[in-house]
Amino acid sequence: MTVVRCGLPLLVAFAGAPTFAQAPEFRISDVHASAPTLDYHKRGMGGEELSGEQLDLKRATMVNLIAMAWGVDESKVLAGPNWVAFDRFDVRAKTPPGTTRTTMQPMLQALLRERFGLSVHTGTQDMPGWALTAGKNPQLTKADSADGPGCATDGPGAQGSRSVVMTLKCRNMTMAMLADGLPGMSDYVADGYTVADRTGLNGEWNFTIRFAPSKSEAAANHNSTLFVALEQVGLKLEPATVPVGGIIIDRVNETPTPNAANLASVFPVPPKEFEVTVIKPSAKSERTLDGYTAADNTRVQYLQGGRVNIQGSLQGLIRWTFGINMVRVSGMPSWANDDSWDIQAKPPQRVNDSDTLSEMLKALLASRFGMKYHFEERPIDSYTLVAARPKLKKADLSERTGCSEGSPTPSTSDARDENPLLGRLLTCRNTSMAQLAVLLFKGMASGYVGGPVFDATGLEGGWDFTLSFSAPAAAGTPAGADTAAEPTGAVSLAEAMERQIGIRMEMKKQPVEVLVIDHVERKPTEN
View 1 (spheres, helix red, strand yellow):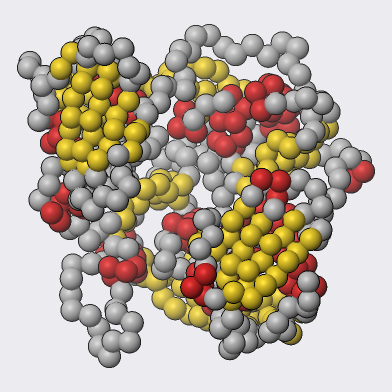
View 2 (tube, one colour):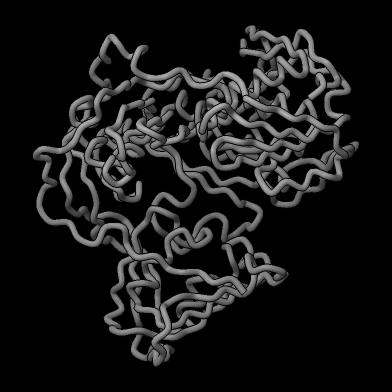
């Protein structure tokens, strides 16, 4: 049985404008637009944040920065120009001794005002969301225990469970706490939407609800959805316009002010190599590290202070280090995935920055496996977006640019209800075709796209659209099959693009940066 605690709202009240008088400031800062990258590790925000006397952030959006500066959830950063959730920035700043994440927040606020001309206020805005209401006879029991509030989960997610139905046993819960815990619960209430408690029920309650963990599971196995389960205890969850409290952006500049000229002497150069590396042969069956499963079943475990353990093949290690798929690799030896290695590496100083770790891993490959390489542009088969019969809606250019999982607005039903195999539902707002190409490569089409995507649609401006498609495993042809698989109702990304928005994904030769391996040894040097 797994115990789930329902969190309290991050923002309890908003009254008046924030006070900025005599706010502490960073001693010096380095702020610039993030460099474009094809490394799949670097699709989102990275960096080690606050370490020692330095703040270090990479590829942070303005929404990321404001949320961190005011200590709120990103869904509570409201309004602002369309680029605030799309453009990315690198930020380094020197902090006074003893700075903590909490005491750093007013410093980051001051930096955003000074370098980006940011102006915000705290308040509320009416936004699409959800309302939790109660019928005349709620099937709830008045709590009579002094125990703390919480919900115990039996079913999917609980250790050892094979059930396709989730049982949520809640005790000593207020309706406000239940409402606050619903966002992000599977695909019923998307993360970032607010659920308002409009039940009128005061006090604490005990109740149990049973439902399928996702809409697709509910449709496939004829089990109750979360919406039906709540109705069975006399509650109702339905779309509504709700007031959302947060940090409201009044004004912000897309280009930061120039950096000072003496930055090179202020910020220390990060370490280039590990201090200690131990490499031993291991069997593929011994890849048991409790950590991240990367390319070619390589296991990566990050430990406190920057130490890293890796179990995997040389091919997996190379792909993980460079954040690259095989479509962009040339010269990989045929034996590179045959052997397995157990690697332990320790940096010369505390490092929790994945960008710095990847640079040290490149040095490890060079020193221990004799790897020599270079990058060059070569024409390779790449997905190219072509306008077939576009079915797109012109966007309101003031809306934020970007794509997110889920329906365009809160809804109890969507395309996934009719076809459980349509497990992915993406909503894009004010997104150009060039930006869509970037987002497809940077993880929005995980499993379908291995290299850069190119825009050849000729369509200008921003567009609103939704895409409903299946996961690659559901839409693909079985490995080794001589013919196409029997129709199952699955829809691939390419099929969804052409049918639903009239954009064709064609394979064409395009110039792409390729990792060329000039030389690499099969076995590492001795420890």
